[in-house]
Length: 214
Image 1 (cartoon, rainbow, N blue to C red):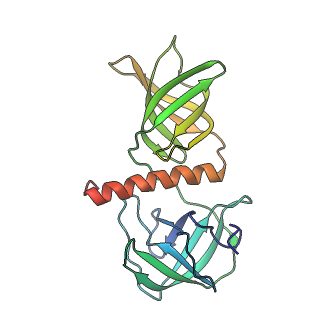
Image 2: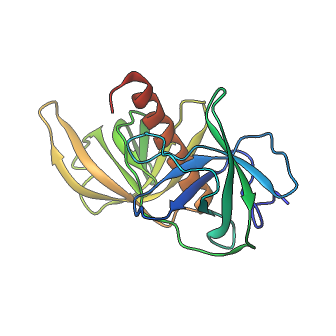
C-alpha cells in the first residue's frame, strides 16, 4: 500500500532515525518503487544537507505524516545505490505504528510572502524558513503588521504553487529601509503543508551543499 498509512507515498518527506544519532535526518521517497516489501528512499541528510553513511545490514526508523498523525516503520538497509541521486534500498522489517516527528530544521530561503488581515495585505520576502515558522521583511503600513498580530501567511513557492495558513507575528523590529523584520510562528498548519515547507527547506540545503556553501 502507498496510501500513506502503511507506507510513505511517492514524493513524501520522511524523517530518518539512526542509532547513536539524535539529530534530525530527512529523506525523500522517489516516484518509482519496487514493491514486495522494499522501499527506495534518498540517502538521508542532516540539517546541513550532508548525506549520512549507514552500513548495509543496519536498521533505521522511518517516520512520516498521515491524516491520523505521524507513523513509523523499521527498515533494514539492503543496498546503497550511488548512480544519480544516492538512494537506499530498504527492506521493511516491522509493522506500522504511531510515532512522533523530531524538531524542525531551518534554512535561508528567500520567497515572496504575503500577509493578510481582513482587507489589509502586504507582500514581503522570507529570510529563513522552517515548517514551524519563518523570518522575513515587510513594508510597515500604519503600524501594521505588529508583534502579536494574527495574520494569514501565503508562501509563493518556486514551482508556482503556494501554501497558506494562519500565523502570529513574533519578535518584530524596524530596519533602516522602513520595513519590519519579524519572525512568524505558523499556527496549527496541517501535516501536508508542513511537509511541503520541510521539503522546500531541504531542497535549499541540498542546493547549498552542492555549491559548497555548507
